[in-house]
Length: 217
Image 1: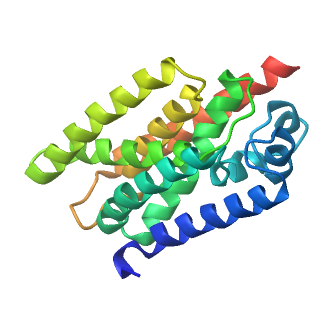
Image 2: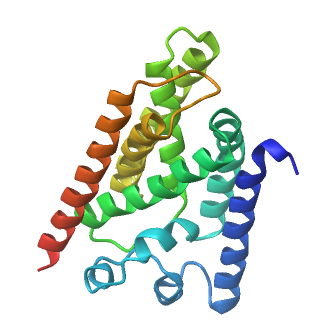
């Protein structure tokens, strides 16, 4: 295992193990299996099962879903983990996943699951690097490529049954978290930006969670 991407590999392993357990239990496309393993279900979350906002990012619906997400996580996650460091990377990944699921809870009534909320958070974090470190030509080049990829993915989401709101929520959360956790390897981020990003994340989580509850009650 590459020490610089150890958390990425561990996350991939966890996702694969859970997918295998779901398959043994009746299949990852079964609504009952998804619910029992912790998929995002708005009624259950509103009823107090908040942990679904976390567990949903480790579940996948079908073989193609997990393969696509895990391949993306490996290549993107390795880069983000190398730049931010393992701990900061893990914070961005997990909180972005939760953020994406909170926005999905507010704006999408469907049962949903997948690592893509967290993965879009990684894209968002890299876009933040492109905005903050304009003097770094490599960061600029990759950030522009990722920006185009994100736009194409969101356009593609509009034509299918994919949870676009979860993707957008993860993207925004990851973008803000990049400022909050900082990137010592690249340079210092102003304290004012970090505080502003932190307050914005708290407000966004609070507002969208409230919207989700209001849509149900």
